[in-house]
Image 1: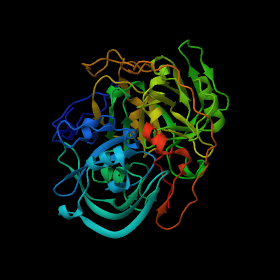
Image 2: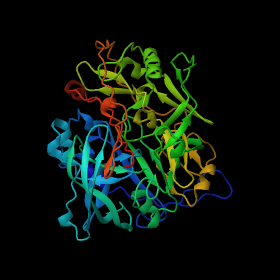
Image 3: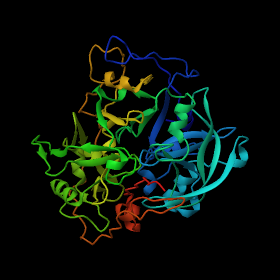
Image 4: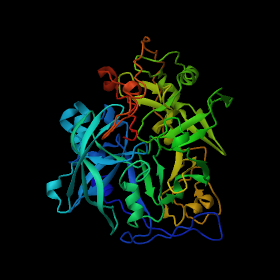
Length: 495
């Protein structure tokens, strides 16, 4: 897809829930109308055409910048397009990373995500306040501004939205759109999700996320609505664990996971003992973090007997061609993650592959290696996650009038007698399309073991500093970065 066609991606405005059926009836409207939802593409940065600023420019993304998901915002008057990393694990929007503070492919990528120039916007307003955001790796010093944020394909623009403009940053190659809880819970001001609801761009304070498979390279986020062509069957409702009852007492999207099991190609499912625990859903983390003993047990079933010096399990790339799954069970729900979606493939000669799970006895989270296989609704009104198996049979986003309607929403993929007509291939729940798998690389022996540097959870800082889990969860050596393997745990705690 050309960059110009991506930038013109429209806000799809659709109808209401049928009162006579449990499926959504979608009624397309003009792209210039506003009907309660905002539909934006979510791009995996390996899809480099979206980030090229000249026709024919191709970025060889071999470093951290190729392991994240991005959405585009247009900020200021006139609008200035900027790509930001989509992060359910943090709460604030900021832009303008210091591209001189990163190198190689990260720097080339950083140059193309776009910069917001306050001097070019007639509606920019500096608030004169600053803050420091610290992540598992990297940080940003920001100054708060308010400005207009335009919504693609819509007549509506959000007015006086507060966000950060970086004055300095380290080890960051794009801004971040934190879409966690906002004012009164995690921030002292209305964040981006709050503003969508407050300014009537959405009717509900909820959004749905479908990252898309590796082969699709692109997904969608619908603020204030759902896309029934991205899943099959009903959604299961999971209560979000309150901050007071959560492991870190921070208002994240914590839910109770009942168990993890492996279903290899022979279909002999094995449930891992002690695999039930609270986990939080974090689109800003490439990898999934699980306790050390559990991670090691799972890794052994993938042929890795030990982790490397950076806490990663190197495995046989041939596993990406097999039909096995790792199964994550919740109350009333089972998400099957195909081997291919779980395994991180990195460019090298010969190819190198790593299990998309890293050990952590301090934090447990489900990152992109899980979320690619799930369709998730983040319901900030009723403090719930609605989730089911991801699929892809088209694009039919629709606005929600009430979060209670989610109990009646049924995915279109794989269903018969549905009210929605789908022209593309239907994929049933539990069988997400993975496209044509890469050729097997043969066995890859794991490197010699080495001790890890456990940083644990960084000490909370007062004042204007936000902290995150330490760099223990993130590979930091030059050799690993050259492979392009990264954990990118973009979640912060409240200052």
